[in-house]
Image 1 (cartoon, rainbow, N blue to C red):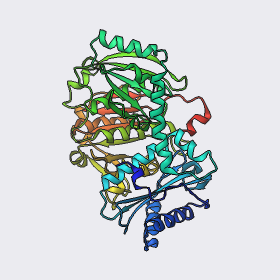
Image 2 (tube, helix red, strand yellow):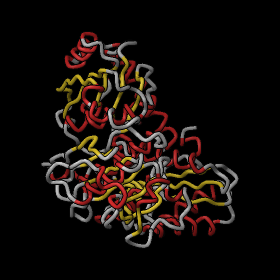
Image 3 (cartoon, one colour):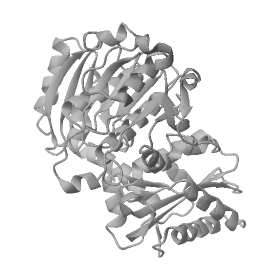
Image 4 (cartoon, helix red, strand yellow):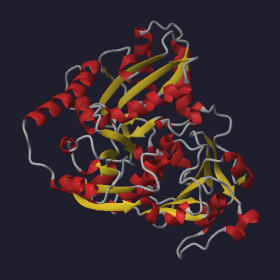
Length: 466
């Protein structure tokens, strides 16, 4: 069920407080009054306790405070705004301008709650949505705004189909090339363009897979021509990086297979148009990998968890922490085997928290992950996204160091540890190089792919991703 179903206050609340605690109290009291909750202090204390454990600021001016409490409804949501901004104890002193409070019933499903938070984060991080909320002075009916936003996409699609526009030459060439090489799918990196006009050129064939950092843009139009919708990191990436990420994510969701040929369409989002066509034969391109592993992604790893971690790794590579580059390792999947090869360098900061509070899919955990990424050691994460530990020392070399293939020059201890842990387990390891910002993915002791950190020349461009 879409998150707007649980909105208990139909208008966006004008927040008067500029202090985080006071703003949360202000919003929580309004929510409690709307759903007739008498134990208001219980809910407020729970929200603030959650904030003390880790900030729920998720970037781009958005905060998602949350709690569980004695409410009759399964979920209750209220949206507040502050044009001047709220001091939210966020990194780099970033201010929160939109605050979405979610309160769940004590018996509500954890996975559903995390799904709602992810949906809310994706919606309110959209530039058009954020501008609609912050650029006007009058009261906003949030339900009407969501309805208009969805209707607007539908009307835009209808008007564009009524007025025939020239076909995009790159898309036309991709469709022709797909027939010529008998490709099974076209992988389109949609962030290269600013609208969805290119969809009109696709018919029932070939199979279309969209890779985007803004899934809301396509989920709302529900276009049946889209066979798969993949979440890309919300950071700029080179064309080679786009293709590597897209192919890996498509393989993880079984949208393509090792015997397939895929046509990839990409471009530069700054220019706003497609400009690159690449044909990839999966078995030839990744032959070295398929000969050493049964699965390109561990069988216990959920595709959405892999998407999430690659996104976080990309953000850490671009942002660093407090203006300084940092490096870290995410070890994903096969945790029963992995645990035999680790020891804690520090007291585990995730110990004692519930699984719901440690779920990597919760956007409220982003700042915590980025903060702990500066600690030496690795994050150990289960295939369904539960963070078991941070600051974990990997010591696979004591058991299987001879099995680790030699790494190219320039790779240090972090990469050796990642190669080692994947050589003796069925886990996937994702590293961020502190010196270069390169994201490298290891499986079965070898480098599966490396994604270079993009060069950002415009100072203000980084702020878009904070």
